[in-house]
Amino acid sequence: MAAPVAAAPRPVKALIITMFGPEAEPWIEPFKLTEQIPVPGLSPDYPALRCNADDVCLLTTGMGHANAAASTLAALLDPRFDFRQSYVLIAGIAGIDPARGTLGSAAWARWLVDVGIAHEIDAREMPKGWASGYYGLLTTGPGIKPKLEYRTEVARVDEALLQKALALSRGTVLKDSTEAQRYRARYKDAAARSAPGVIQCDTLGGDTWWHGHKLGQHARDWTKLMTDGAGTYCTTQQEDNATRNALERAAAAGKADLARLAVLRTGSNFDRPHPGQTAQASLTASTTGATGGFGPATQNLALVGGALVRDIVTHWPQWKVGVPAP
Image (cartoon, rainbow, N blue to C red; front, top):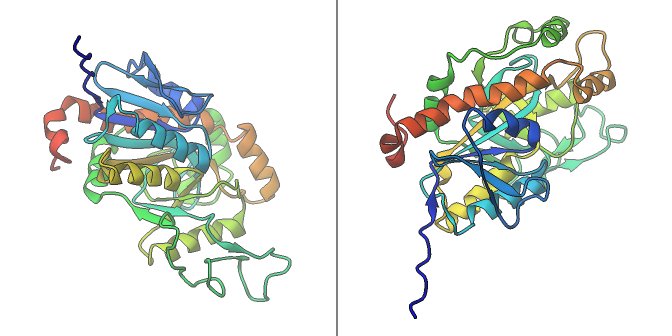
């Protein structure tokens, strides 16, 4: 009796990566992601990929570096799928620098920077004259770029894909809320006070939910340091360097294409307080939803990222071989 012929791996045109349920939900109905396929190794909270008839799939990893890396690699190495030509879109909410964007703004990243791989001296014990107790591993103080020995500290996405994503989504009409409008009016920065829009600036990842002006300035400085001055800090999140590293491992195994990664983060809260507010009160407003930005931010992920995903599906013969020319 002949052995059964194994089914060919299912090709995936686009893999959307979200971190928790509210980021995933806005994609499900518009993209008809009704097929649920359990994958060994995914988070027990989100144990299945959701896919549609257009070969678009949605992965929800669970929050934080560890969950993101483990779930992403488990999905990419599943032999039932073919991700070798897939475009991968990380789509998640984030804190945002009021000097660069506002609640609901959608920021496409060029640079992914990990802020957590560092030395730290408590601010009460750091040397006089230091602006921050954080500095590069195996360096002697702030302002010195460390050697990139972890290989995950900083990375850049493909420029052609970034520019195409911007061009496709720039005119998207974004969601907003009355609460977000009232909250952003308390800030002095023009970017913070404006309506949400599609922007390009860079993202900083670390599992600590930091907050405040001083740590915010460290985020700006660290991004400049790690990108040799080329990056501009904009959003703060937990997972993106870890997710990219999982994709890089899969690419090294011939299972994915690292150049086909795009990263989108939307502002659900500001990363520092408005005038007259303490950092602690600002962080509490951010975590309780009092800023009014959470709803628009989650909805805008699918609106802005969806412009890219729809074009990939609609024009797949062109996208299959590479990013189409503008």
